[in-house]
Every structure is written in structure tokens, then in C-alpha cells.
Length: 355
Image (cartoon, rainbow, N blue to C red; front, side, top):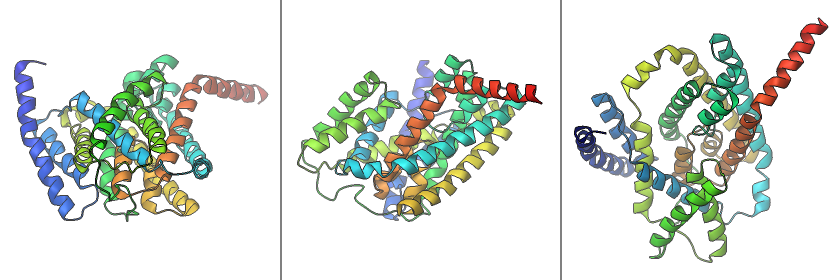
């Protein structure tokens, strides 16, 4: 990046950062849910659209924010018995099956419009978006098309999630514990992020930036006989960064580049979000939880935003548990996709020969 481009980016941030804080503060005072995320989306999105250029967030800030979101999310699981978590296995598997089934059907439809079956299916799988282009390259798909579709889905879900959540009734649980933060928590949270993220990478965890700290925090919290309350300043910074990530990608020029692929892809994204919203109602009735939690638990991706909204709204462990189960199922399906398609082709070939 040239010096002039860097200066231009910094100048934009000098406007966006305080505007995000001001909007977040005002929205929070008005009692708007996820106020800090919405404030950041509005400020960064307006700047990206007005300037016609993406507003990039420093990767180190995003990495730290994802880790903090993982730490916050883990706190709702810290005191939940494993037996209770097992109760989410069946609905989690159901959500995974629905997600995979929709992507499979949609991908086969896209295959009739000039892309391979592998490309079509992987481009529509909700979950593990950052991994799908790499998987596509491994299985013979087109990583460019996959990355495009995954980006559009994440953009749509990330932007609409806070807006939809604002109209739903949050459970109002202990997403943030009321106790004041101990001084040592200021040191512990950065340590959990710093150690958890490379640990997640080492263990090949999906979305290791989030799930590494999440897993480590769950272990540490189970060993510490004291409340782990994230300082409000730390959580606000994390929420702002997630909002910037969502809004900063609202670039008209980039969307024009994708224009040829938008009609079919957007139609599917809308259908997917509608189907997941319906499944969320089933899950909320099944588990006797609020629809706010059911909607977040079945949201088709944007895991960082989901976890942030979950923490902000005081959601229970169902959101995280079901998202994890669904993500594991999606990644497992993607890994075996070539074999599954080959078996499908062999089966269809046999049927053709029989007739």
C-alpha cells in the first residue's frame, strides 16, 4: 500500500472510529440491542459506500477481537454440565443436516449454470467460510467463485443479523456478569487470546481465532473458582471491530464486479436465511428457549457476529453448542464431498443403465 493510500485510510478511520463510538453510545442509551455493533456498521458502511473503497480493519485488531468474542462466548458454557450440553446434540445435528441439504440442492442447481458441482455446493455451504476456498482448491472446485459466494453470504448475514436481532426479545440473561471485573482479568483475557489462538491453529480447529480462545477459556474457567467478568471496555472494542468488519465491506465497486453472479446467489442466500429462520423457530420450541436464541443458533454463518450478539443479549449455551455442532458437520461434509459426489454419480449411472 502506498503512503498516500495509507494516509487516506488513516484519515477515514479518524472519522469512522469516533463516529462509531458516538453512535454506539447513543444507541446504547436508547436501549437498542447490540448498539456498539450497529454503530460500527453504520459508521464504517457509510464511509465505505461514500468513498467507493473498502475500509480495511487491521488484521491484528480483528484477530484480537475474534479471540475476545471467543472468550466471552465461552463464559456462558463454563458452568454448564457436559450432560446438559449433550442435550443439544440432536437439534444441532438436525440444523447441520438442513444446512448441508440446502447447500447440496442449491449447488446442484448452480452446476447447471456453468460451475462444477463441487464449486456450487462449497460456495453455498454455511459455515467455515474462510476454509471453503482452500477446500475447493483441494477438491477441484473454483476457489474464486466459492470465495465470492461465501463473501456475499457473510456480508448479507452479518449486516442483517443485528438488524433482525433488534426486533427480537433477548433472553436478558447473564451475557455479562454484573460483578465488577477483577484487576487480574485485564491480564487474563489477553493471555487467553494470545495462547488460545495459536493453540487452536496447532490443533487444526475450525475458525481457530475464535474457537481456540473459546476452548481454552472454557477449560480455565472450570478450574478457577471465581467469576470471570470481561471489562466493558474490552468487550466494547471487540464489538466495534466486528461491526467494522461487517460494514467496511460494503463497497459498491466490489459488488459491481460480482454483478453477473448476484441474481442466483442472492436468491439462494435469501432462501437460506429464510429456511434457517424457520428452523430457528423449530429449535426454540424444541429446546424451550427464546426465538432470539433459536435464530442465532441456526444463523447461516457469521459466527463472530452470532457470538457477539449472543453475549450481548444474554443468550444461553444453546447458541454456541448448536453452532459448533453445525460447523463440525459442515466441515466433515466438505471434506468428504468428492467421494459423496462420486457415489452419487455412480448411483445415477446405475439407474440410467437399468432404464
